[in-house]
Image (cartoon, rainbow, N blue to C red):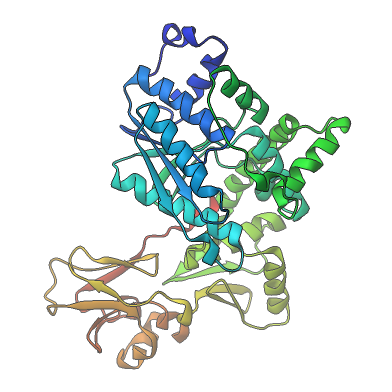
Length: 431
């Protein structure tokens, strides 16, 4: 049940913020809501508004803070949030991540760790969705950073306002509000917050983008304006996804676990639509969260022009006459997965569901599912499938110890079946 105008009226100018949190999940409201709180101004404002809404709606909230260990101040910031929550009757949890031990792209590792840790926490607490405190300033800064990386429509499009990740729902109710507006809210309600010193450290991209945004203001380039541009880009991306989906249904064929697409579709399709189809095929096979870089896609196209096979994102792409085949790379397939219940089956390599037909008389387990691999030598009729040997080697097979029991895609059913559950269509739409 949504808050009424009468319930929102006492909040005056703050009623809009309460309304945004109240409608964050549309009509599918979780029974329990999580709030991600770092201690910064944006998340503290979100926590305060979420508590106001909770008191009126009766939907309980819990707060969570991730101490990433990247700054000495992080532990005290988490403690500040904990004290505030204790004073206001909000259950709070601090999650630890040893960020100091991370290597490579630490910022990306920290982001992934935060989502993973918070998702696991939310599931354990019976929380159905988590609120995030990103603002219009975050949208604008992200836009500038991606512009610097020469991103296309997808990269410049508005960040997802509602999305799923790590098996949890996430929403950003304040994506239209400015950082300054939320600071004013905090001052009006005497809510404490901390300023992250890395926000001024120009060895990081976001502070650089923040400074660049201030420099662009005299030209009329503002955070609010870039937010609108990002929204326009989202509209354009949605249209491109629509037409890519239509063309995918028309020209992409599946053989076993492979995808086939004409080298030169008739009638022709725009290069951007073709690129989206290629990327979707690679991602649907590999399960990769992010698409290959443009430079990697350019290398793939060059290899196909000169008639060479190319490996990218755990896939082998090759040209067969006037057709391009996208196949799974055997060495990139997932490892062995136990099948405790043969009739219920298991998901293997992120896209195959393997199970035993309840009506079939098959051997008893225990069973393991792994790539068929060199065991294809034990499948006498695999050539009858018409599929390449290397493609079949990357399909699921059922083993009892080292003994091959079934290779459903290669023609050795023995009471088992395997079907694709990672549909290409889902990779052509925003995920």
